[in-house]
Length: 398
Image (cartoon, rainbow, N blue to C red; front, side):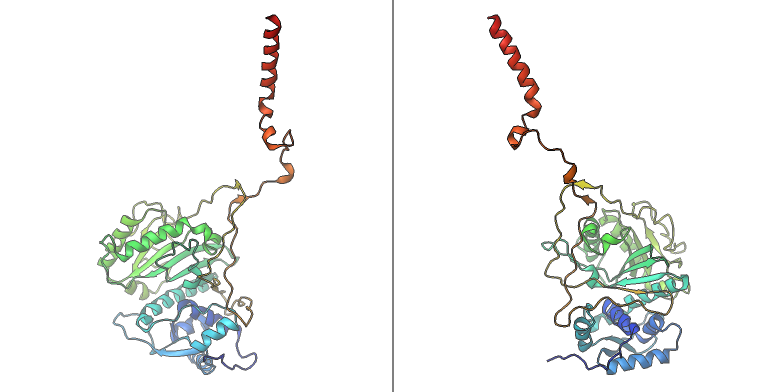
């Protein structure tokens, strides 16, 4: 039977907890990615010593990374780390965090690419004095409609804030490593675009998306240029809602030396369905292009004078959405409050329906009669009296 690891008192630091939370979101990361994310001002030897110590505590598991032919720096070594089974149990019962989903060995390369995108967003935010938050699948998997659950989930959600906490950029991440044909009607990419349209319609019911000022754009990282063009054509065919998309090649992005927002490697499909930007391989655009982001802001519905219906979170997904927020300095944000050690993390609190106000009972006008059915005759009373007067006049004359 799996037991909690024995850890000395005060042995787990705030940075360790943030590292566990990030690994729960990205599932797997290399030594280099962990060093760049959590020890940017130290040597990789210092990061490696701490990772080995956490491995001795049975909280982390070291894995051998697969070798790929794609030339980039996201696989600099042969070792990577993920949460161990005992570490996942400790994270849930002691730290009160959702342990995420355990990575499958066949998905190691995919998870490393997702971790690299998250690391590059953090490095860009740190250089600019911003904050980079990363949400994994567990935070995005809230199901507003249990009878019609989502068929696909994004690989991650990146939220970029300035030093004051204002949201600057929001992106869904999709690493497209499949070999299916984008031109077929029932292809996987067509289902993804349909799911993003449905997520846009239900955005105000999702606890995480309802707090954002705009619906996130979707970033697709794919392989060859031909696949990118086919992907863009499929998006334009299936998309119905105002959702923005940006596409780039993996090798071009991962070998670039400029920050991820400023790299001119993106094929942009604006949310307002206007003509694409950067459709030529020789004239790509950066993500910070203002013309692409003009119509990304959400128009929230006006207030209605009805009593809101409570949104009950489904019992099928008891995970609490967790975000990893690392400030620009090396200090790491405080972890969320710990849940009771005897049980799992509770389900997310159901947010009230936004844009709904209750009527003011004190200012309502009372009916003229005490009975409800008599109150309806109040507007006809003058006409009834007038008719009775005319009837009396006619009877008197006769």
